[in-house]
Length: 462
Ligand code: PHE
Image 1 (spheres, rainbow, N blue to C red):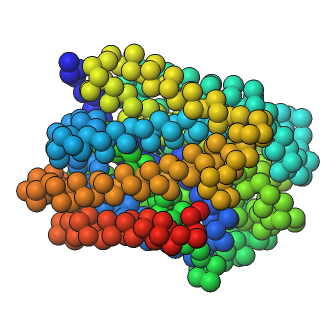
Image 2 (tube, helix red, strand yellow; image 1 turned 60 degrees about the vertical axis):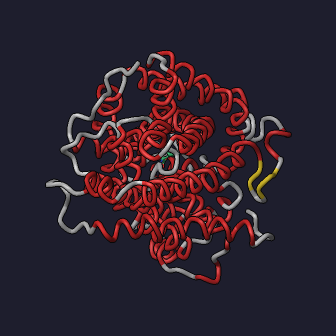
């Protein structure tokens, strides 16, 4: 039943596509607001440690498992590790489906803000127009939320139908550099704002007295989320990686790019928050809206050419999100193709339709339908969307990542992993023994003990 597998056309093509998966709403929307909620500095430091000690080794592990097996996430586990491991892969497919379901709702916001910014650019903007109140009214409009998320899902489905090389790679290759360019411009401008010093202190100077157990789990979960790890996205993308490209080099480039963009976005946003009077207090009531509340303030009140850049920026946020949603849908689709023998077209439609079912509930859970918006399973995370995000990022992804470390670290032979990682293209600073130690010992212990601690510490389950 096997159809010919797609391949990236070059190493750069792969890096750009994988970075496209990694860089998305996790960097631009989520990281800044969870940094705010978790009081900055210490949280950021824990997150960076998680990225380096857990994220990077697992990124290498996922890519190598994918390339070695040349299969989808579930198939890769089953054929390379052992038949029972198929469940680890399936858990990834399920996690991907959940994330895709709610992610498209947030991604839909970018479409609305493109339209909003175009209006502001032409009709004029007075400070405070992009207020938390206006944002609240927008998200509680259920039908609008659902329509926007549908548009976004439609775009994702359209790209995935075209397949790996043509759809995903081309699009990402063009758009990523523009996004980075605009962010740099905004950074330059943000650093000259009055609150810049305070913002940098908030983000980079750790105060461990403010770190809670739940923040550590959140930092770990976010490291998985932002690097697209723990659900098979990088296994799947790795399966399209050519033999002559270095897994190690690609992994490092993706991790580095992702981290830089997250920090860039956060610095920009906090410079605005700490500079505009009253914004810090009011943003506290609507942290999830930060990306959509603070940046228009900078564009329209402080940035030269802001009227042109604002709509362009939200277009790029949308594209960054799109290159992430396509990687989620690709996990599901490649599984349906490989394991269920479907055609790409049917697999894409089936995957998209399943995710839409989840999106409907998420779209209605931001104020539109009371019952869906207010229940709390995890303290402080109200409603379907927040609950699914917390469940997927803080529990399912780390569990998936933990299983991967055991599978690749303990069930794959040294020869197999060595053969995949070390070749003439491997950068010479790479130390195989050290990677293996991190994969077998450091990463599983770190992930296992954080999860265990949060479960057994009992009182603090959030
Ligand atoms: N890494 C993406 C982001 O930061 C989200 C993502 C998660 C993509 C899991 C694929 C898989 O937005």
